[in-house]
Image (cartoon, rainbow, N blue to C red; front, side, top):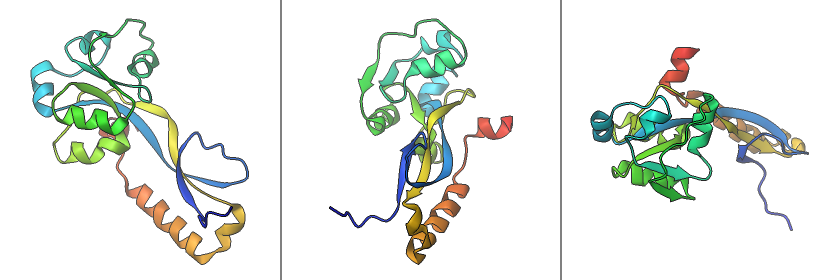
Length: 168
């Protein structure tokens, strides 16, 4: 059965056999919370700092990735809320429910608008990124080429976290 889909955007590791794959941008994990909560509890830089917050837990953005990336072996607080949905965690965090380790692409707008605040300068490059994909033969189609050019240009204009920019 044919779907009629000529091209797509995928979030993953970039390994899809038999497809043309073009990386659009990296994804980053960064702790965020409501600005008032950050003002009350202060920034986080290590496992000890996390004890001041109720942590929002996600199976796809685990706190262990952020902690162990720095080589810390301390256990983070057991309390907090767990969700399987990244957006549910972001909405709960916006409502002041705690501190979340969130994907930058999902919270950049909320940070820009002041609804969420970056709670740390520690940013972790995520193991997955965003890609344009299509069967190689379809790159010759004008509509696929036009879409590819547009999405690549849009991806280039997407901001990276300030901490990453400063480190570059």
